[in-house]
Figure 1 (cartoon, rainbow, N blue to C red):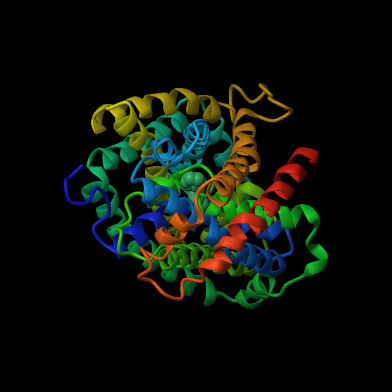
Figure 2 (cartoon, rainbow, N blue to C red):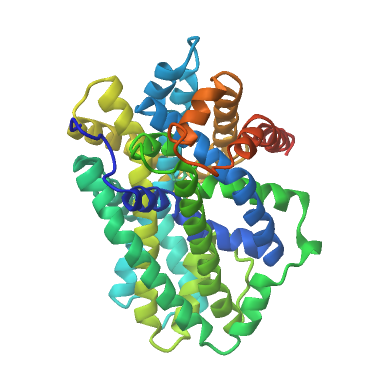
Length: 447
Ligand code: PHE
């Protein structure tokens, strides 16, 4: 670390890097199908409410912990805690990062394969049955998905080895604007298709009769997953934010970017899906099985298919970078490993675990944990348990066991920032967020 400042060199760098971590497969792959299954616009409104009311305050909480301590997710608690034991939250964060990365890299690897297929025109001209068959035979193969997963892990580790400024910040500053441009391009294509109106209606017309209790919880869980909260990604990135930047404004910008990408992804996907008479509630396969058919029916579809999968790949990459950085920051600062050694060893560990997630679509599909495949099990324990429990622990730590004056000092940058709505934030931190989190956790357990 350099002597002047250990982290990002500018506020825009911090926003783009953290928005890169937040914007990911969650926005483009998970959000649209959750929306499709939960009454479209109604889900969108509820999710938006959760992002604003709970997501932003929780992100600020992680930023406070990170920036105040100037440490990784474990070191942060060791430095800030008055009584020992809180660092356990940090270790759970590391565990969460490993488990999320293990299954996330499976889908990230799929995007690489689809980029290759789209660019080499292998997707065009297939019938819907052939598209489904291509997806099924690819994901259940025991070599190629593993190969692409490893490629994705290596790509991520390469960026990480270049460090926070020359790796993470630089790559995010290039890729995030590219992502936005590609997304807008895709929006224009989708909106100019016949039948686009119906898709927009589905997206923006709130049908609350289709929104169940599970859908509302799903919207809350989605806001967590999408904003990367509860396992220390934002603690780690928070430790890289400059002291003079406003944590409130930074969190708002990141959350707005994240929401915008999710909504725009919906604008890309649903008009196209309706225009070609496909089923909007296609489940997790929406992106890989439904969309290629849509592209096949579209003028210049092969080109747009390639653009779309590149977009998905970029979104995934900036997120895997943030996932691995949680682990690497920890091993560099706490275990005093070099960045290179940390990147390589963490890559190998993730790969060793991730392979099982990949193979759970093929040779290991019969292995069930709590009635789920290994992949689904990892998804479940991280998104439904580790992340909300981690977030709850963080709010309790900062809201109840850390002096209010210090929290205020960090949020207001030593009193220099006015109008930071500190009291509103503090109320949410102490009461609203923990209560909401307890509700999610309990309903997750009851099922
Ligand atoms: N927020 C990322 C997404 O939406 C996923 C993620 C979760 C990344 C947790 C980092 C940490 O895809």
